[in-house]
Image (tube, one colour):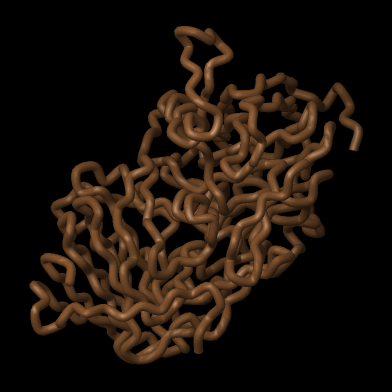
Length: 240
Length: 220
């Protein structure tokens, strides 16, 4: 879908390795674009009006009998409500099982690179980026949990072994997330923890917020399955 | 039934020498402290019972069991003997040292009133559920635990296979009467259990039943 500029609220490029937080207003859409290919964006989500309410990986997966996320699916909170609907996705698979990197993982994989020597090319990690950004909203360690890893694909075999699929996301791939409540998004563009890439080279992404319509009665995500329909009913009750 | 990838290991610990033994009825929580080096055993007394379990570092409960870090570090979705349970801050909290069941889930989460409405219909909102048990135990406890501390838990004895094309399935229980799992604490931890009261899916074979929790002061 081509975006008309008059619907666009803003666009922003997020440097690889960096972090971002923003409240996406109800029925606006956050588009995340993989600018160069092979990006990974780890994201935590909260209800801005009730910060105790947050993205819940198990509730999201079991309600939709899926182990990954793509168009037509919804991201559920721990209160049975919809945070985001995935209304467009050119990538096809987003991981939510494998978590995010921390300082020890990044150092073990890529070696240490400190600010003192490297200035702003130092090795950052998702755990610390999350803690910094969460703190700006009065959140912290207790709010770390399973994230969504946009643009990353990890499959499992019959005995549960995890296999990262390299090169899954192409240059220009994007995902559109329609907010069904006011969603606090905390995200960071750091390599997926299972990406076997050997050099620390976090990819940039573009973040675009644009106005959209409230979901109709026939909305694809609302109608995707009865579980999603009921989650939309719970969400709309919150605003009645 | 033996599952591919499972590591069936029996324990040599003697229940008669346990320092603590509790029977936890279906629909009840259990909150206890496990000191470093102590061993906890959870026994599925009558079979096919899901035991929803969270662990916290005793000295900082904000540092707690992390399903996704545990999965990532072991490169596998399922828990069995040898699985090291990692925290959000990268601490090894416990290790599974014995397992006569073979596979335990950690992506299926805990049922709640709200998730029941989504999964089974609005009419199920009043049914008892795991997160109510977690919340009540947390609210009653002298430890500062709250809703904020509830995160993706372990479901001991529950089988939630993921297919290679990414479908999530809830398979028949693989547990049976007397099956158990045993964990050695590698740090001082708090353990919060909800013995699952779910009646709307086969995780408890539609008949939630009691479990036994045993603690030993040391290993074999």
